[in-house]
Length: 450
Image 1 (cartoon, rainbow, N blue to C red):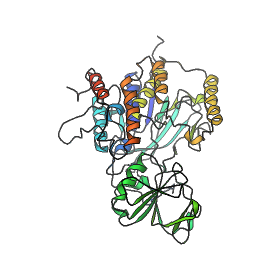
Image 2 (image 1 turned 30 degrees about the vertical axis):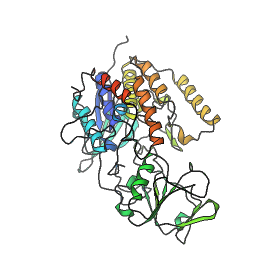
Image 3 (image 1 turned 180 degrees about the vertical axis):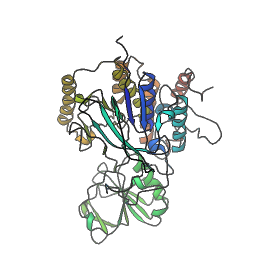
Image 4 (image 1 turned 180 degrees about the horizontal axis):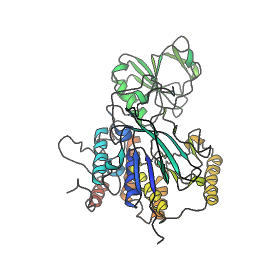
């Protein structure tokens, strides 16, 4: 084995990705500082009733609320499949814990706190410390400028060998383009600022989107709203279809326009009067602190160029990103990406040359273009996350994805599509749950499992 090199590494963010980065970097012998602008670990999993004063979230000068959780949110993956591999997300029957297979957001936060406690990660975190600028010196070192969030201290500049970006991508809303909406007199809000259904009492709501949050929120709003119209490109171009089981929810094609008289136009000349447009339209990757002299860009939500969604070839391995892919089970993937980064920084794992990495990136982009896949789906790993994870596992010399985890993920996806109202309570994969807990019992570090 080549000699191990220890690096000074800055990790931006103490959510699940940042915690995994800190864990694996320190285990590999690196010195780690984690910068976290909030007062506790957990990132997106820290719930707050607070919302932003600008409900669409498009004003770049607005005070940003990091969390996008709504009060009733439960995971859409079973805990067994979503947990870190080395620290299973086993059911905890202690008082005030949530032992359900699809727990609420508070239980996920408690799990992340348990993970941080188990591996002594909190001592590496500088809380309430906001990073305002990250740039590369002429010497090759990376400079990180930070300041205490609520203090009067001056900015502090510190040099690091490497920076790992783990700031998440669920805080900067993407908004649907609606012709005429600037003249429409109703209210608009992004799901980033949705918490509870009460503000939608007796309203007529047009909800845009078809993702997991759109499914959950539309059902919840339907309990108090007069009407909910779910507009999506994925809905057929028919005049309308009622949502099974609901007498006040309709599936519609995408909006054609919003009008000055307060109506919303759909295909086939259909118009409805509406009070609120709710955008459940996802988020943008956003790195306002990062300066790379144009090397790394965000173009139609493609962060690139990145080798395997992690390393900019010309800056590798000294700049890396964790957690960009979506349509994945995130925590196990974070774990593998972080182990890979840590091993490369120490010299235990070798990257291809810059030229070879760029060739790989360009081939990936070319294949997307040839298949007609828009840039904004660059980091969508639907259909190949486990092949990607197993490729990284091979680079690290660690076991590939457990077969039960792969099967459980797919079984849940099918069950969620077939039973969107009840999949969190009804399932048919108990054999896989048994296999998972048999694996968990071998994990000596998992204090939840007796």
